[in-house]
Length: 440
Ligand code: EPU
Image (cartoon, rainbow, N blue to C red; front, side):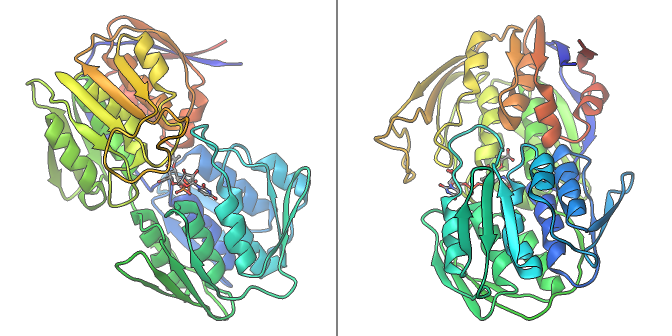
């Protein structure tokens, strides 16, 4: 059975949606529970596919996971941990990249880890070389097999001096989850400092870890012998918040995003204001709306935190198709994150992709064969189209383009959206969208 989403566009989205814990924090917080000798409690957990995948992976490793879907409370009890069969891990890993983060905790607790072939969104090569390199420096032995990677630590894991070639979010998390119980001190230079990393550090500190973050992107971790559980409320999802904000702008609507937090959206809000979007912050969330005038074009570069996130780029590109004039977007985090613009062009958008760096941020992709800069001319009158969703963020941006377009769009592959957008169909209905889901 494939799902088909039919969208009649042209209606402003209006109303309120609730955003819960960040997709890019919650699964990692769940993995951290493996390090504790007592149960952990995580609050504000969304019902998304990635949480389901990590729940299954933890369960096959003997962790008892109890969820209250209404409150979003999770209890994770690792007291009966065991080593899972490779075939079980393979069967439950799905399309997620989270299994790679099980390495440190599983080596500490079970002496070994197995990582199946990794999935994740198709937005570039997404290698794991940094991960394997830092694990080796901790003393892990990496054995690449046909079905995946087997990792052991015959002499234990020892604190290390590390420097990342690029401030990778996942590798920084890998180092944190491994170093907290390693023997001695770890120093990580050029670390990622995204809000989700700070939230993970807060969790690990509650468990008993000693972690210092310096202003120069250096993180120092003093290994301890034992960690306990944690009780924590996950930070809100700043990518979902920005996605709904962009949907308000593109459809000329007005959306209150309950749970959105200004602090972690700072770079996005500056851009939102410059393009002509309005927002108003209160204690419970942020209201986003189209001010009624014309949208302004702008020059935008994605970057690691505190820059403009790569995951905000796709919905913002749709908004820029409605701006009066020429906008330029330089993607510096992933080499291949403009594939989603092809359906937008079919819908009537004017977007040209370039191999050159159209921006001033230092970028690893210049002079190479990657189409990683976009020139967008607007405003474009978008027409409905048939779309097959390519990846999570690209897919959501297709939905908002279809919601703004005149005519009918037929969208397949929407299961991908469930990976990171909780109950998005219910939310679309609540915002007055003319959408219908059928199975065929
Ligand atoms: N990289 C390597 N080698 C590695 C690891 C990363 O070359 O071993 C490169 C990547 O190819 C990429 C860059 O380093 O060009 C940054 O990758 P990073 O490791 O920071 O990304 P990630 O941890 O795999 C997380 C989020 C992504 C988000 C990025 C950047 C999760 C599960 N995923 O990915 O989120 O785009 O950080 O902020 O946390 C999404 O939510 O849709 C999503 C893709």
